[in-house]
Length: 200
Ligand code: GTP
Ligand code: MG
Image (tube, rainbow, N blue to C red; front, side, top):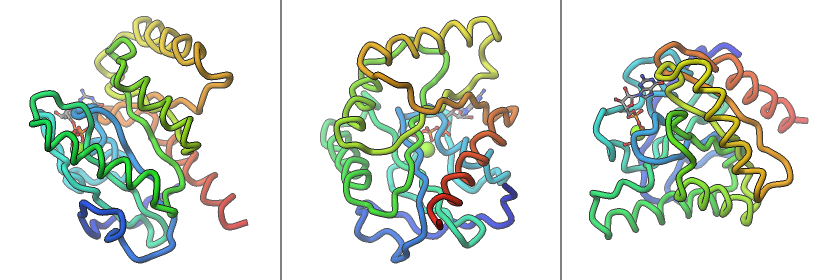
C-alpha cells in the first residue's frame, strides 16, 4: 500500500474527544520507549510526524494521524515507565485502557515489544488482558537492527514459547526496525488486507 498522505489531526486524553469519524483506526501500544512513534514515522515515511525521544515518556496523549484520507494511525502513550509518578502512570493506564475498550473505530492494535528483551511481565499481563477483552491485536517486535539474526531468532522463538503457555494460537507477528524500515511492507500489507475486509 502506498502512503500518499499522512497528517496529524488531534491529540487527546479522552477517547470520546477523538475524531468524530467512522474511519478505521490502527493503534500502536507498548512500553514506553519501545519505538511506537518511530514506527509510525517509518511506516508513513515522514520523519517528524510523530514525536520521538530517546527518553521514555515522550507520548502522553492519544494522537490521531489521518492516512490517505481513509484511515487513522493512532500513537498511544507508553505504559510502565517506572520513574513517572504513580498518579501519572495511573492516568496514562486509564487513557490507554479506555481507548482500547470503548473506541469502536479501533480496528486492530499493534503491541510493540523490544526484540532485545526477555518477555516482561507487564507485557505478558497486558497481552493476557487483551485476550480476556477480545481486543484484536498483533505483536510487533521492534529495533531488530540492534540484534544479530541468530539472537533475534532465539529471542522470538523464546517469546512464542512463552505465549503458547497461555495461548492456543499465536497472533500475527511482525519484526521491524524503524532504522532500516524492515517489516514496513508486511505491516502495511496487513493493514491493507484488514481495510479491504472491513469494506466488504
Ligand atoms: P514513548 O512515547 O515515550 O512511549 O516512546 P515510544 O515507544 O514512542 O518510542 P520512540 O519512538 O520515541 O523511540 C524511543 C527511542 O528508541 C528513540 O531514541 C528512537 O530513536 C529509538 N528507536 C525506535 N525505534 C528504533 C529502531 O527500530 N531501531 C533503533 N536502533 N532505535 C529505535
Ligand atoms: Mg511515543
